[in-house]
Image (cartoon, rainbow, N blue to C red; front, side, top):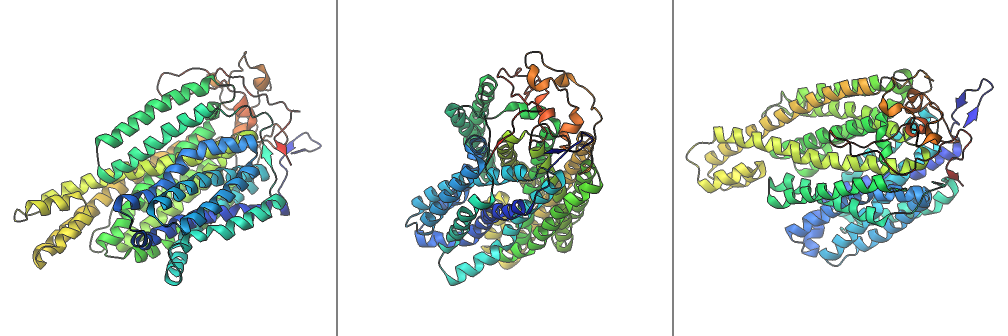
Length: 594
């Protein structure tokens, strides 16, 4: 932070060390996505070698995501307390050790345990890298570029994952897929102390272990229930898991309002840039996750591609997302982020409208081109939304904000698969029932109604003509389901475009200063009980646009600090936070920097 002769505060631009540090932070991001995509190819090989049952195979795949989702908020907050670089190095060490255990696991049970440890370690990497980026790049435009690079590395790993995995599995054994993480983490451990600064909250308070337990007991059952609903439909166990998670979550929220040093600082949600960007990101994840699931099934079950070939068809989508995410900060420098985000969402909606016109016979070009457009469009609000989330939080809460952002993404994916997948299945069953003839055995009809994979298996057991008719009917019905989901998703994107325009219209283009006062609401009135952080009465528009800096190296603390925060998940507010608000003085200390 510096102040020019006119009294205008300007952000310090990052130098060579920060950009080299970004390359270090890109390593674990690239690895995490690479690891996920490679495992899909390795699963048949390791299952045969270890004799894993179908249930064990599901846990090998799912336990990693469960642990990441459950620990993201905890690890993000822990990084704020003990230091983000320190947490990153601890997580990298644990990830490397767990990778070796997974590679040489002699049984499915040990592999599941290793994958769980990988998930916990992975939960330290994502919020730590994103929080460090927010601290290293205080200039809004440079931070936008850095976040775009961070996103591009993740998507790049998903792109090259099938290719790298194919080579490894062709030349070596299945465990080599896990050993990819070892040299990457060793390089990170060697370079991080030299290139990455340390940041931590100077007054972190005590870590509340009860809150940690409550957060896990909230997130894990809900994620589990949503995943099971997507797999097996409406069953009592997953519904009960979601209900239990919701009840525990209520207790978790109430506890956070009473603590002086909460695990999750609910005051963050009082900032409309923070809450709005989170909401748009989560709903965007719901739409894209559900549509992506149906598109991948369309390529395999309707067009008849192998999993590897279908994955290769998806490579252009990932590449286009990389390009679009890199363009996002450049566009945000010329135009208001609200307009860039809304335009991206409108492009995504247009792409999905193309998908609605596809059929089972000649719809390949429409599906691919439409989904490419959707991926390009969603990359713009995704890249800028992450910047808004991180930029609207005070610097000592960047880790917590990163954890919340990643957790909302996990919820979005799980909700998307469950809701959009269920909608597609409902349309499929309705259309299939209307087109099936009366001459099919009851067990064949039941198998076909379960899903298109069941229909394909049942068709293979029938005489040629009957089997071909059943498969054609199933493909038509599935395509109808894809059309409906794509149409609804397009409508959601158009609504989100309008929301983005309204919520972020006050945010100026990157690099410009805007000091006009936003319309005052009840939440903007200074709170008598907390005179310190609200005394400056800084215009919210400047704070939320991440232009005005309050502390050395801080971003967006003013708008956050000057609100008397409330958290209202239901129409009736839960109540005003009772813990002491953090004091943000103009001359006060920023984050601890080493």
